Length: 437
View 1 (cartoon, rainbow, N blue to C red):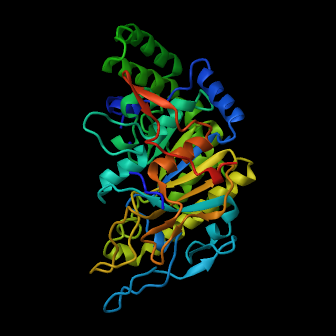
View 2: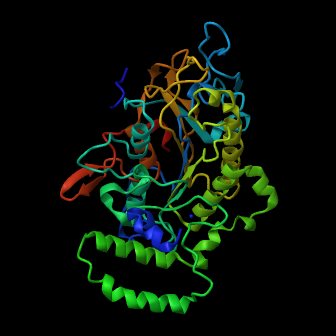
View 3: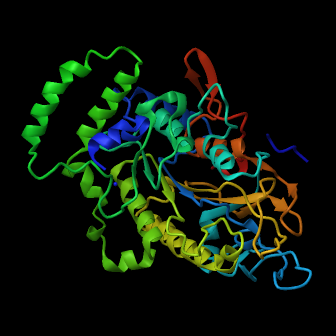
């Protein structure tokens, strides 16, 4: 067996270091042309243009979702380890999902549950969240960029009138640009109806008035030196001012979509996913969508204690929204161009704790890839009878990142530079070659 490897004014927005910045499209398109050329000449690289990264914060239990095993019983004495729910057949023979995922189960021609994801980070949320976003352990000497920032850096926006990287959720350093700097950070929002806070001009500020303000400020900001913090602030401010207006903000008007389609996506999380599809159409390269902001089961995916009892509410919501997203992208001929990737800190063990919930398990868990033009097979990798040990085809977090990069036409061996120090975009990751067309 292979060893697993190791809301707020514009001013407030801009003050938060990288949070007011976005990844700009390359000035002359050279980097994008190189990426396209590499994808065309290297059969190991895919041709997807966008990535929607679904963040299931808290730790999705693989044994209760995409890698079900025998039925357990948390009420027994002693408690019987196993899945919380019954399993069901999917469209792929031999592949079963949890009973609360019937819609996704019918779409396995377009998705793959990677069941052998693993890392050996201490099973603590912040460290594991950072690992899954950056592909590396936290270091005291370097702040590594997130996968969203790396994709933004490598490919830029598909349309220069929009950011390259957007976050629908709450920001933190794990989602940021690290040593790449503010130019490769994200624009974020938590209100899907109104879009990013601080990007709509006040009614009493006309475009001409805004231009005059900027003309007064520019000579001062041009004094910023090189790679200084003031220079980064200047770049972030210019990008924010460029985006502030109706051309960008119109993408957040979900009322443009039919009531029937909005209903198909479901509730608040589904509307986030619908917005992500609109942002793909607008040309945003990488969109992260957080799922569990409303904590509908009390704990989100962190299913200790009572959170486990109502976990099915989260799973059902995920099934509705993700199946709608896949179907919608497919109907618009965007599915092969758009990779959907799940992220979560770690999985959950088959055993129940004393309160009937589940603990943390990073050594074996499931993440999902959908669309992106991949050779989908419903499930990849084999685990033991309780989804505790990996039996075949382990996939490290760097491997998972490498697969995402390769699907987007980015060479996983590409290097970034922290000053003069070369840093590979993955920590030795190897793509899952059988999935890439």
